[in-house]
Image 1: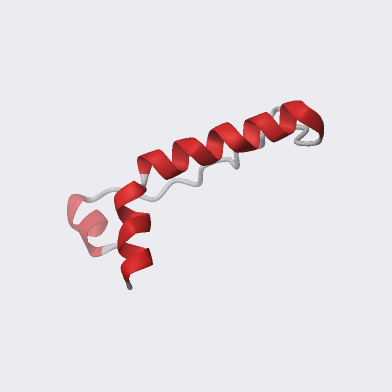
Image 2: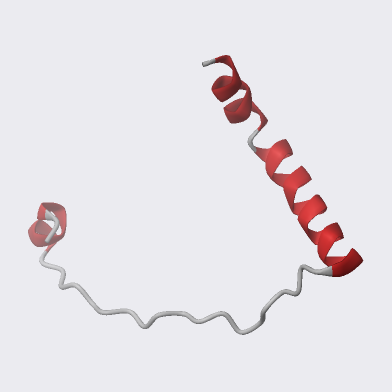
Amino acid sequence: MNPKIQQLGLQLVQRPKIKPKKQLDLTGAEGQQIVLSETKLVLRTHAKTFKKLADM
């Protein structure tokens, strides 16, 4: 157990596993559009990280 949690006197609780309710079908034109838009979002969000990795 984490010492900080012990100092506070907290107890660990088992949380239920969250199962996905919906599956995405990434085949076809719609799936390709989802992958493309999510990729653009990731590249835009983490541009500095990718730049640093490229310079290594």
